[in-house]
Length: 65
Image (tube, rainbow, N blue to C red; front, side):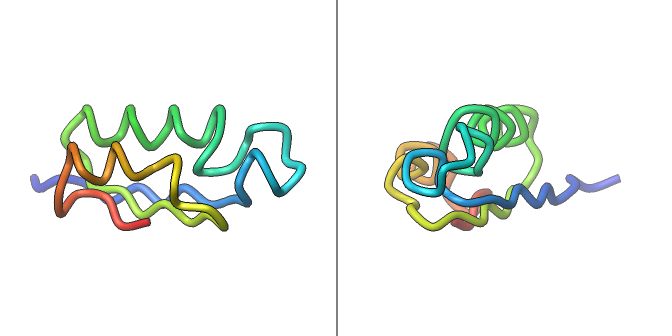
């Protein structure tokens, strides 16, 4: 069985007022990190991809912000 694709959606925790639940902040960023660390592919939907840039660099081809 191949790797799954995780879809993590939400506005940026910093600017969207979501309290850190978006893909680029808090819980969302933790989910993205966990998925990538587990060998899964991740689609991270966010208004601000800057906080995710270290993850996309560390896991090239596995994370699409």
